[in-house]
Image (cartoon, rainbow, N blue to C red; front, side, top):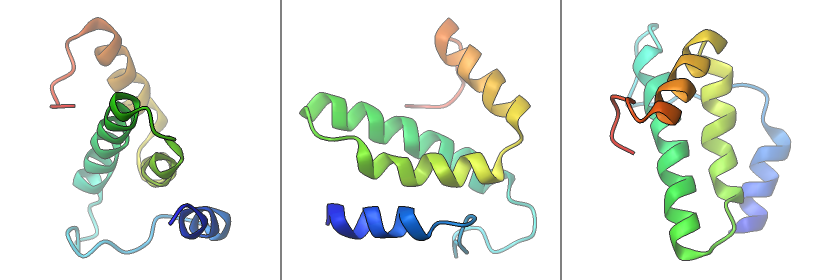
Length: 86
């Protein structure tokens, strides 16, 4: 499985189509991938597993989300005032 993820990461150009978010507005897609990345990191750290599979979510949200949003969300997480459930 790790080889499959590595292969996908190697071929990654931009966020693929996600049928959960079929509309042009990709704000929810951006938000969900940001949450999924941090949830994945937390889950992998709790198990002591390799967090490499989480990189997929990070690449997707970095290609969809404006940098200013990500910076703001990171600041909120550091302050403990982030509105999402991670």
